[in-house]
Length: 210
Image 1 (cartoon, helix red, strand yellow):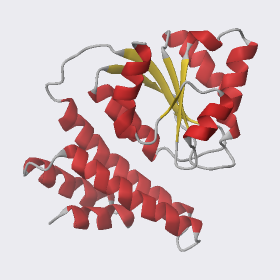
Image 2 (cartoon, one colour):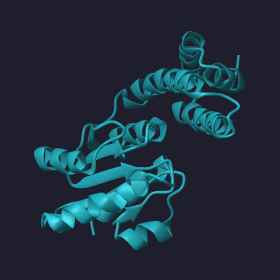
Image 3 (cartoon, helix red, strand yellow):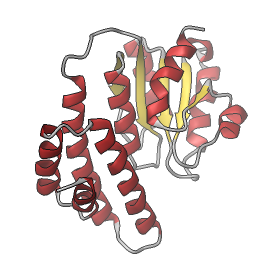
């Protein structure tokens, strides 16, 4: 059984088989990050099929649940024996109107594995909730994901609200998601654009140390 088999199980929404094979792959010494990378590609294909109406929301959600279960096993393995340190506090969430959270969940995993303290506010999150939670946590970063071009403006709304409340300089705002770009980050005044979850920890640590 291979990563290809695992991707097929996840894509078809077979959670039990996905969990069982992930456990076997980890037990056989497969790098958890390699598993996550393969599953991310597989979910990208699921998303494309959904966009083409080849599958529908229930099938996509089942695939997402199967991947989430597999990623959680990888997360546990990656955090085994991890050195506890605090490189910064981060609020992560997917913006209002957007129900995608696979990328956000992987970002959370990568940040936690690299010494960040993370509070996940979920998906379809109102901009005010990002800010309220950041205030409660004493966060250093607000990381807002958008996977649809129609929800990208809510990333800008977070920044605008921070300005209105006199809090803009208090937080580093990080954006990401498939339709986002460096140009978009520059346009809305974000502090950092992360093109993928793997790059985020080092980029964010560098930003905090400037």
